Length: 189
Image (cartoon, rainbow, N blue to C red):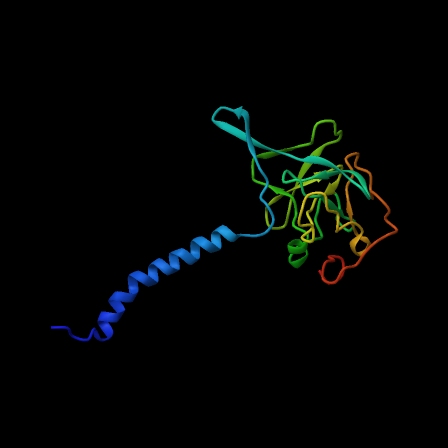
């Protein structure tokens, strides 16, 4: 004899399906993440008994308008913000969403591409992460760059510039600045 399930019966049938659906949604959300690629790290020799260190190697690229510039390990152009100091970022909150800082995991050592002189250092951000700095300039990506070889952030608001492999500031023609809607970071952040 087939009886109607009733409220309790439906709840028992829906619970496993609901759990599977929630797990699937959580896995999908984790896979989507952000559009910015995470830096690639590689293991380097041990730094002492029981310890190891990872390294993150930057790259260099030649861009038509600005010349030889530093790029992140993912090949995306790196920028600096003229309102930063050598030891502190002034780009936080929504600014850091539009201009994601180049950060490395704790214990990682950033390395310059072959043939590039200068020193990379780490600066601790207000959130505790370690941001990479080259010749005193904290490094950022630009959310508007969607592929290698782009420099859409060059000159934005007259405060954002690509950083040349020689550490020259600013690179290219700083007089030709842009201010795309919502892409800045100087005013209001």
